[in-house]
Picture (cartoon, rainbow, N blue to C red):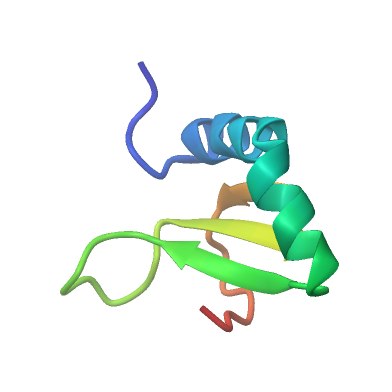
Length: 70
């Protein structure tokens, strides 16, 4: 099993996000786009990132300094 928020875990999470049509379709209706960081409270930076464009996850992986807005 992949380590929580690792590159492998984030890519699997992206696939699951996109399988949830009820979620991604609702977010698409409001033109939701965001770079979402994932990690643990108290750490200096996130461990993973999920990039959402119009409700769909378009990329995911280990966080590498990308600009976040959530």
